[in-house]
Length: 228
Image (cartoon, rainbow, N blue to C red):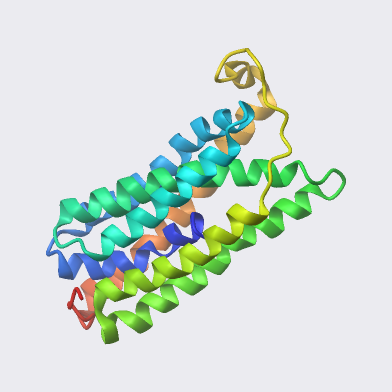
């Protein structure tokens, strides 16, 4: 919910930023693009940290970065401020949160592992429904700043719940390389990596483009620009 759910919601903010920050769609898209890049890139490091026994520290750091990024975005006025807060800070937090939590969930199940992971992944859909709905409803009424703070409060409650409930069952890996590069020698893994890359290309574009195209072609610039 607080990792992929946030990114899925970026299309709403993309439309708003184009108008409020007076930047091109290409410039604004770098915020969301860098955010999701960090989710995957930092996620590989977070996975290694989880294997080494630093699950709790990694998850806590990720939660704090997500919250800091969201609340700092609420007071951002310039493009570079939004980029650092939402693109970099939130992206780092997403990367530290996503991989460890999905890894730990898989350790609680054997026969029904795929079903458990699928149910957990539904949290992204929940976030993709809740956060855009909040943004569309609150932006015209209370402004950008308080909209982001409201989203941040939802994140605060859900992240605290996750920190309380989720416990690692992974036996810390002692010694060995930080990354297992030998995995790239396995044909099945390489096929999975390429397939995942192709699968995710579609959602990235579909999350960002519709709102921008709609605003550009129909001239819908009715988003409240108050940055409360």
